[in-house]
Image (cartoon, rainbow over all chains, first blue to last red; front, side):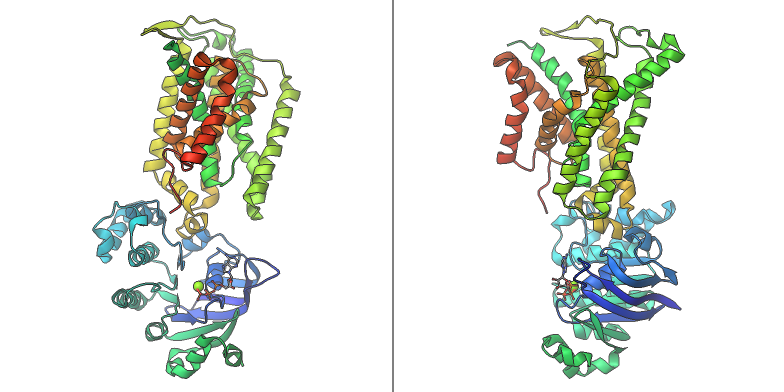
Length: 243
Length: 304
Ligand SMILES: Nc1ncnc2c1ncn2[C@@H]1O[C@H](COP(=O)(O)OP(=O)(O)OP(=O)(O)O)[C@@H](O)[C@H]1O
Ligand SMILES: [Mg+2]
């Protein structure tokens, strides 16, 4: 079963300057995939295009077998997609509870309060002060709220853009722990990460994006050899990596 | 100094505040300064007048004043029709103009210019259809009743203040307590993220127009009842509306109302103290002072 597939997707902020230059891949249901690549490669742009936040200029996106190319984000979310952007991923002027309540609106009325409670229990840092403005949270706590919000609706496909960015090692371990548990429940996971080792340990398969194109697509085991990745991440050897 | 200025200020402030609510909501949720908003007040008044005429033709008794007010049951009924038509006007304008610019990702300044053009077109259309001659909801005269402390007000005026307080309270509760209000606040902070949270942003935009247009129509009817109905009545209120919205803090409904009352009171006192010819300058002075001293307004939030 295919959870998500991209076919020759082209996207960016200006049609004359595509950032994502024709990317194709298919993610199976329940698979955990990480997307790696140097800064500026277009990872965030690609995942935002999938989530309906950046306009695509060509190609298609299928979610659970349905063509969702060009659909608005809220339609995708209602079709089982969860997305946590890299930055600006919570509403700072709303309280923690209000952030969760907005997402919970997609659930049947009788399930809402219970799911919000479950999320507040899962992240005690949030649960200890639900009425506080989300803007008062620390960087790590914001990531927790962003993740809690996305998990609340139990999406089939969960995409996270650098959920561990700026977190302390302890919190990174906690985030990856949570993600592992989520992945084990059968949720399809797509993770953009700079934290390569942790990402590789969590996922079955790695995609490497360099300059808007896929430079590698294969099982994570093959990438544990540090040399290849080192070259990719230094950026200067990226051309060779494509070959 | 005559305490009557307090009543005069509260009454014109109510109109300004109600009008400023729509302005502050479109500003925070659609992210542009809508110069058409003043004309929505004028259109609301004329559309209500038209519906009242039709109703009066159907049942003459509706026009007979109901004691102690200067108007009959026909006017509230007509205002309901006026609200529906004003909402239709703004939703239509969003569909053919603002919505298209939004879909194209047009810069805010382009949208503001478009609203300026639409404002002129709407005003000319009113003049063309109804002529520039003032019109009136009622010809009945009302005696102002003493309230004590040297203040007087007509029953119409007291009703307007009461209605305004009720509407502001209801809207404030809607925005702060309901799911719709939460979605509106989310869209005003970050429309893209709101979509990712599952919010239908287009629906929130429609709700924003519906609230703004309804309040504009009611404000227009109140202004028409207090003074007279003219094609330029809304345009002349534009500066006070913007001042009130900015003074209250963009996006804040109680702020818009309080801003409206402050401007109304300041105008009324200025008329007494320095003379009627200074009335129009008051909004401008307040606007400039707020922008220089406290640009986020009374209840506005700074960018987080
Ligand atoms: N909002 C934007 N408008 C215009 N260009 C943008 C915008 N956001 C990103 N870009 C450009 O798109 C390119 C890819 O950026 P993107 O954020 O997708 O990279 P990334 O792979 O996620 O990098 P990082 O690892 O640093 O997060 C960059 O050249 C960037 O300058
Ligand atoms: Mg990125």
